[in-house]
Amino acid sequence: MTNTSSWDSVLNKSVETQETFNKNGSFDSQPLFYERFGFVSSRPELAIPTVVVLILASAVGTFGNVLILFAVATKKMLRNVESIFIVNLAMSDLFVTTVGQPMSILGRLTCD
Image (cartoon, rainbow, N blue to C red; front, top):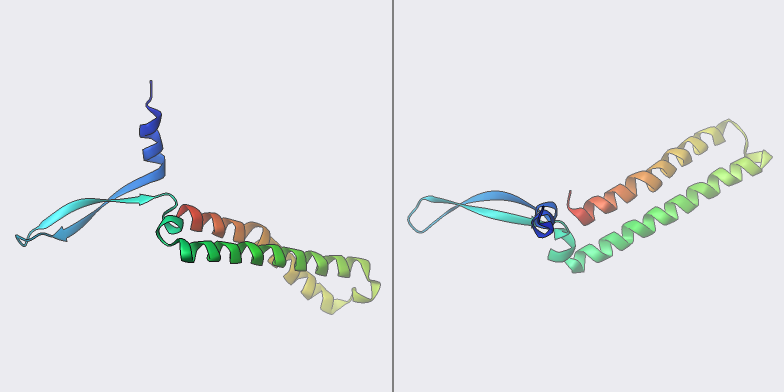
């Protein structure tokens, strides 16, 4: 049988070593532990507003790009050559706000 607490510690922490000088002038190798949510737990006063701003930017960007695509699709007057460029930009930005930014938020939370 597998001990679940040992697996939890393996999944939530990665171990690296850091060499530091000791008083004798030689190097000591000490383990460093990085917790999974290190950014949030070490600097919550910076992490929480950052994550909130990223979530709001993603939501507002997605909403704005959907509005642009809806306006071009429904208004006959907006279907011209110049609008093709705007639609292309809106579609690529929609991909960024729906896929890229949520991955960025997860990366910030999990410190990957």
